[in-house]
Image (cartoon, rainbow, N blue to C red; front, side, top):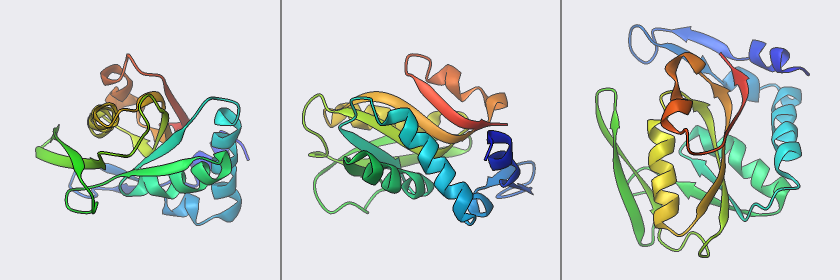
Amino acid sequence: MTRQDLASLIRNIPDFPIPGIQFKDITTLIGNGQAFSEVIDRLHERYQNQQIDAVVGIESRGFIFSAPLAYRLGVGLVPIRKPGKLPAATYQIEYQLEYGTNRLEIHRDAFQPGARVLVIDDLLATGGTIAAACDLIEMAGGQVAELAFVIELTFLNGRERLRERPVFSLIQF
C-alpha cells in the first residue's frame, strides 16, 4: 500500500468534537488489517536499526501504534497517561490547550538514565501534547530519539513547536 492508499482510509469527520474542527478518524485505517499492518511495518522498518531503548505511547490513540511497534522492536513500552491512571509515583506536567489546560503523567522509574526513547502518537496537530510528553520523558531520565506520528496536520505547524527534535510522520494532510 502507498502512503496515498493509507491516507485514503482516514475518515474526515466535520465539526467533531466541536464546530469547525475536521477530525481525522483513524478507526477506518486500523480497522483494515492490511493497512494497520502496513503502518506498523513502515514504522518498524524506519526504527529497526536505530538505538531505541523504549517506545512511549501517548494516551490513548498513541497506544494503538506504540504497543505493536515496541513488540516488533523488542523493547519495552512506556505509557504516558492522563492523571490518576498510573499506580506508582509519577512526574506530572500541565500544558496549555486551545481552550484551557490538560495534564499528563509518567512513572518516575520509567527509564534507565539516558535511555533513548521513541515517542509514538497518532496525530501531530499543534504539538502541545507531544511537547509536554517530551518534558515528562526528560524528567524521568529519558532522551527523546525521535517523535513519530501516523498523521501530521501540516497546516497547524506542530513541527515548529518541536523544531529542536526530530519528527517523522507517515501521512501528511
